[in-house]
Amino acid sequence: MRYYELLYIVNPNLEDDRVKTIIDEIDKEINKYKVSIINHNLWEKKRLAYPINKNKYGIYLLLQFSAEKFDFLKEFERFLILDKSVIRHQLVRLDEKPAKVENIESVVAKMDSLEDESSEITDDPQADILEIEDTESTESTVVAENFDVEKSESEEEIKKGDK
Image (cartoon, rainbow, N blue to C red; front, side, top):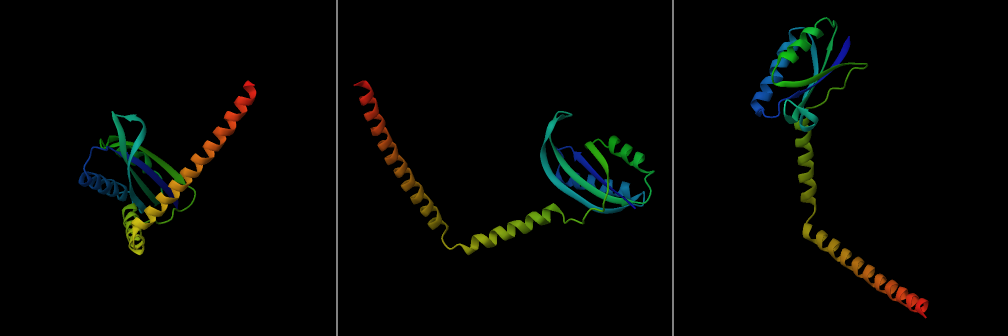
């Protein structure tokens, strides 16, 4: 059994529905070759290192799959090249089986729910802000006092040097 990873970039100007249909089309195409898909995740829209077809951004997608035979890879890559919505792709053979990963969107939703719970724990968020502001103001006055002391010492040294 061989494991592969395909990272492909889709045109950023496409709507979410169109991106989902592209994902489905690629799933259907790869399933023609009797391949088992491990992960197929939508990463996010990111800035490209250099413009591709006058696009500065791209939607990144990751597909990990396993296959017993590898004779279909040339045909599958040809399909990706001919697909106008896929602007770049890279297919790599993996040494080990990749771990099954949840979809990024569900992970983000879980993180948001954890942040909401932690914000409910704090009773008065304004109290924390006031404490920080008070601490900063005392530190700034201490710095200003030290500055005045240093300034007065340096003035005395200059006067001694002038004499």
